[in-house]
Amino acid sequence: MGLLHGGNKPVFLTRKDAARALGISKKEFASLVDTQKVHLVKTAGGQTRVSLAEIISLRGEYAARSFAVPYEKYIKAATCFCNSTPETNSQLSVLGLPTVPVEYIERLRSAVQNGLEPDVIRAQTPKEFFIAFGKAEEILKHPDVKILTELLYMINRGEEEISQAIRAKFGREYPVDVVARYLEYFFNWRSMDPDSIKLYIKFLSEREAFLKTCAFHRADHFIFYALGLDYGGEVADLIERSCLGLLHKLNIYIDGFVYGDLVVGQADIQKLSDIIATLLGAASQVRAGRVAKGKQGDLVETMIPKAFSRTEFFNGEKAMGFTSPKEVTGA
Image 1 (cartoon, rainbow, N blue to C red):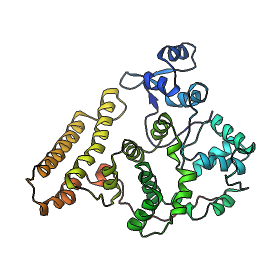
Image 2 (cartoon, one colour):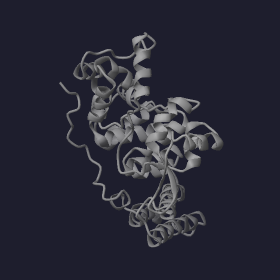
Image 3 (cartoon, rainbow, N blue to C red):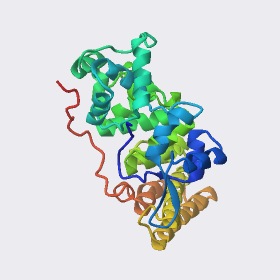
Image 4 (cartoon, rainbow, N blue to C red):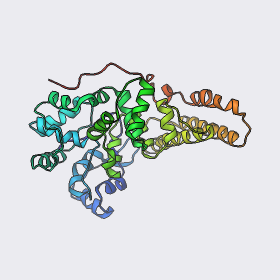
């Protein structure tokens, strides 16, 4: 059975979340456990959990909607130049994309072969596909441009605004049609149901999963700050909305502490809580008119980075830059 993989994220769900992901009742889920279609495990903290891999494998059979990933159209195209499901998943791995269940690939392959996807690029090799794909391949090659494109799209920015942001951030020209082409094949996340989005995010690297969770919950100003883009709003609004991202991380810390899924202590939780309280206090001072207009910009430039620098906040992440391209097209 093909499985999603990626990052260092926990791969276990609570029984309640597992039942919800399958679209079945708690009683039906208990029946799956009794018949050993699902196996319960104990975490280091003594909590009962369910393997996410098992839920992914069963999802196509039990869920109300089939599992989906945002790069579904690329998978459809890949079935044209890959002779088998393992080869298709191997091609996903080459591009740094999480692999998917066998049934999912076979369903997409059948749709393409039956002529239900007439606009999909039908190439004989990966190289031939990327030649037809055009300049949009560059977005896929460069992680910094890729994450900017995807996060902005998640917070409902259009292709033109994304193109302008790439130009402002990296000095690179990607016309609207190029951005649209990339999104069509590799990040059509708006076509996904909420459960599929949540499952997809669980298999991303810690930093990307956190950012996309924030984007999914529309912490727009925080995303702009994280990407180093002009937030274009009031200082108090920026600070408050940036705290939404911190609150998501605090929830992750608390869950990790309670369930033993993460190495996190009470001191870590207290430190993050203090940061949030400090920032919200500063926002309150601004709104109350106790910070002069000329000093408000200093809060953005000094206080927020002091509270959590991008490097520290994202676990040692290097400063974003336009990195050298990786070879992904194959022969």
